[in-house]
Length: 463
Ligand code: ASP
Ligand code: MG
Image (cartoon, rainbow, N blue to C red):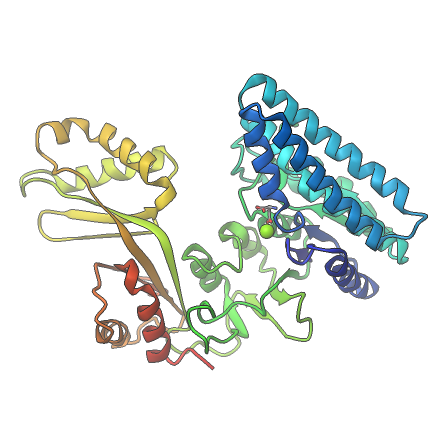
């Protein structure tokens, strides 16, 4: 089971998480993966920025805030007998953090490997807290820094696990605990390279950690505890009658995650697919709700489109060869190469017209790097006028309509487009792959909400 930042956000929440853990542990061997307490990772990162800028007062203030939050939680949570040891552990971990921050202050720099070591502290602190509480309640538990178990490549800040090596480490360090009836309490978010350099898996990466552990331990199931009732047909803040989906397939869940639904970290599902490990997305604030079951296939074949997501922080980049004589495929290949070079993710891609102009959507925060890479890669073509100046529209949004049951359904795309146009929202670009799992629409940002509501209603996705 994995508990996210809000599910670990206070002593009261940690008690709930621990009770859920203990209840499962009575039934079968259980391991848990925990996030940092809510907002802690942000605060850690903020501290490191202050360190780089040589702001000693701000560092001290943040560390005091972190210490108070974890000390207060420990006091509220733990028996007097268990408290001193927990407070000492918290102080020792925060001491490590302070030392790294001081080092950055001296350097005037934030080396990525030190950042990764420092920000994993949030997860280590919350693991200490819940493990101490579980032990106090009679459920044997051991807090484990996942840097000892999850082996990754060396891409700091966005590392990828090396699953075979991780599996071996899990067999060595975790299997004995499970066999002895002890709950391994694993830090989410972090890992280390094979030669021991600390890494992290990207923001929100604890889901991914949980799926890596589920894979490495051959788990029967993975339960992801969050603060919403499951995967929904739409963002309930945009669409009041959005409903929780009882079940979605791995493919649907992945599409929803990549297209902006915030229930799962996008990379989470990959390790689970191979072993067909089912996932439950559940709400620790509403444990009576069933949640969403994510599995290889639906028990009742899906009917049509089932969910609609949107993303606002995106930008559309358009590239157009200047004449039909220019080999458009070559230009396209080079543009995509430039994107791959800087590791930018293409959210949607569309091309049309005999001149082979094309456009693609990327995250807004990647725009500057992408533009620079494109201009460098296409420098000659741009200089000689073979390619028109690259155009950017950063006032757009992406909408994704998702559902296994859309495959082969004639008329569905037509209904979606008609619903959107009825709201007077212009469709700027369209993409649907031949898997027919997702239809992507690019619309003006101001039209996102209206379009999402219209599609949700037209496809009867709501309650
Ligand atoms: N604590 C990390 C973050 O805030 C990882 C996670 O919460 O999943 O990004
Ligand atoms: Mg989180």
